Picture 1 (cartoon, one colour):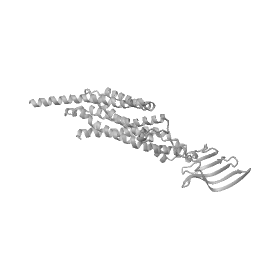
Picture 2 (spheres, rainbow, N blue to C red):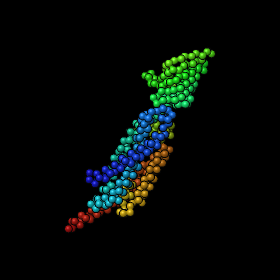
Picture 3 (cartoon, helix red, strand yellow):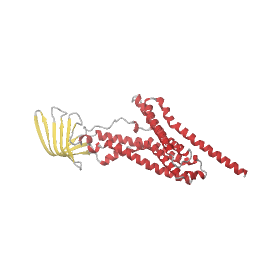
Picture 4 (cartoon, rainbow, N blue to C red):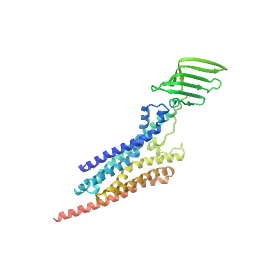
Length: 373
């Protein structure tokens, strides 16, 4: 690789990493706020909360990489042009097409990373995210650890918790079991905590009493420690239907007779989207290059060309998102999704190819002049 290629590629990679990190952090923060109730209302630790939300990053990264590269190409090439570095490179004999090669190499690298994320990393991480989310929402811990709320994990069972301290100890516990109307049970305890055992979850109550009504008589049992089996109260996470984002490409492209046709169509649309979206790195890069490498140098800047490139890029990305929904509704829209990717590539390549031909003609004339001398 030539020194000028390394120079431009290095700037592109640094800018892409910075923009990707910034955009991913902002979007991740907005998404993480949706799950803040796990900490506020359900007593989930900050470590578990971070594990849960970090699993969202691959799905965000897949969507952010092409736009981030687009912004990076616009920024770097505009800066090189404003600083007259591109002018110097062209004066040294480099064609506009050769100046575009470093950006295309970085775009190919970003596209490969995008395919790695979309085809493997995203299904793995999103599957773990859905499992953890389902566990926290439906398991006994997320039901019983709500302070100041009468919860009903199963019909006939009521649990109340006054507060929970920073060590995870529960205070002011009431458990009323009325699943057998002929023998209701009420338990009161000063303290308690939830523990996992090899045989399942247990509710350990301390310093309380157990009241049971049976055959019209009330029996009391005072205890210092009482273990309550709540494994039957926990909702199972087994059998959760798979989300399309946690399925691999072969699964998405395989017709499943056990689900409705609309769900199969949705899966096919997700598969095509995973194939198409990373390739937008090439499309958007070519659009940016066609805008900045064409035309004459203007000392007052090239904001009109940048604005036009941004407009085209935004239109293409919005169209891609729209075609994603249309592909999920109708098979005939699948070719339109690919055309939205390929047509801009062809137009941008045509614009750059024109400059390539001009450079070849100049080279041929210079060669003929040198031969005459």
